[in-house]
Length: 182
Image (cartoon, rainbow, N blue to C red):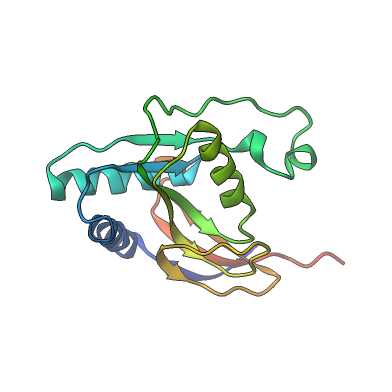
């Protein structure tokens, strides 16, 4: 793996989180009926940061949940020998809530589709909005994000690597090139 560029640094990521909080509040006309759901793993930590920023701005605590879509993925049989069973920590009624689904990278759209299936199994939300740190293109499904930190078009040999301090010890987003197999 070859790092081609650092496309978002710590300061840039902090600014994006602040912008997300303001945009989410504005789009939803405040925080009433608003719920954040972070997709495990990095979406979880991004959601916690956005949640904290909304709390600072609105002076109110909104529901926050972590969503694990492992069993909803259409490729889990290829990825895991034995599927991991993990319970999402959604302990509140999602009916009529405006849910903001948060993830780090939007690529094919398959993970988002899985997340929407998981949410719909829990109830009937008023809306589902998508917030992603990076949209790298190459969609396989007709899915687009409502809130995008940065659009980073990639080639077939490139990937976007998100690093978060809670997991990786730094806040940064890198454009990397995978070594081609001979």
